[in-house]
Image (tube, rainbow, N blue to C red; front, side, top):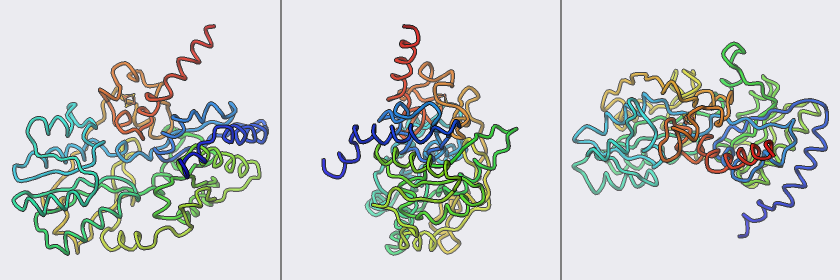
Length: 380
Ligand code: SF4
């Protein structure tokens, strides 16, 4: 298919990989984090790590929206959905993320709660319009990519004077999470990185400029890349070159969609509706200052947190699940002892096994076959 096949050309990928192998011969290790779950999925699906020399390693990052949502916020959504007046609308992946006590939104729905999967925020608006007796709450999650559609829904609800619509806002921001990973002290399990493959969709909204301060402060290059395999391989080559040249710039591989300033209209709409939260809990990263958004006072009537006086009760992850370490890049999915035994996409024990963007789910779908091929190869 035009506009896809040309970015999946295996011969071209192999020839770029051979250039990487040729240039990454400085006797050092190169460790790059792909921040975004979309890249994690692409790296697993297309076997990109198999193309790289042993001294160029990819580290999975926390950029899967479903994965980073802490259990306490899912518990909040479940409690909300149990109110007889509430219809809770959310995206499908969230339905299966384990909450406290092994509960999920899907199980809660099966037990009778009015929880509905939607494909867009506009679906939730439509439900509010057609069912005025229901109080429709949109369970909003995600990075800067999914924030503009939530802003649009809030504006529409205001314009249509929908008094039975509100948003439970859990939108989070990419640059603070990247900073948190680089700020992790060694004693707390810091992962040593040489640079980032920057997110694609997020950067279509925020542009490449917001990474500049981070690249400068931490002296780590950032290359924003598209999600196709050739995008990722080219971004890795650009990172290797920056490391070899001793520079730490923000570069844009994804020029067909991303600009330095991003989508100014989307940014304006987001700024109109949302403000920074002083602090927000992330699964795996803990409490991060100024890392998430909430509705401004001017939109308080559309804020489910205020309407229903939601007070989040922090809840611990399943102690056997290593999602926290995986989201910080400290461990790989196969290093979790539950991987493929007690935890699989059919029966996820942690958030990283739910969404296709989760590192464990991506490794389950593609990487585990390579693991077993390597094991067989080693035995033979
Ligand atoms: S394999 Fe399952 S239990 Fe282990 S870290 Fe991944 S999601 Fe958590």
